Image (tube, rainbow, N blue to C red; front, side, top):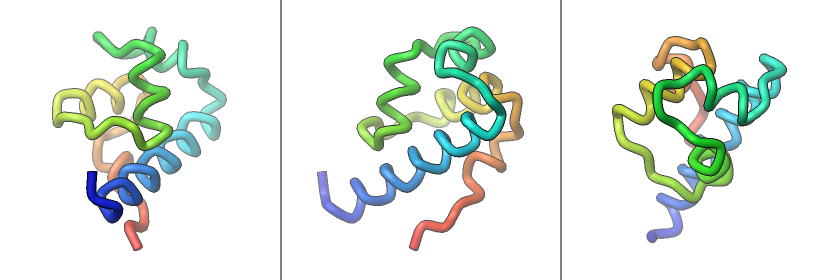
Length: 77
């Protein structure tokens, strides 16, 4: 994967982890609140190892109890 794409995925993952920990949710909690996410997928997202699909983004938002727009509200630069 290209370096700039990897960096953006890592920034996104860091943002998701910050949201989750700010809500005092574990990865297990997020998985339980979602429709089909598992802890390993959430871990991969938070570590910038997964380029997720739109439907996964929606499920992640559900698991966090947030609107999907809040998941995308972070600085890419």
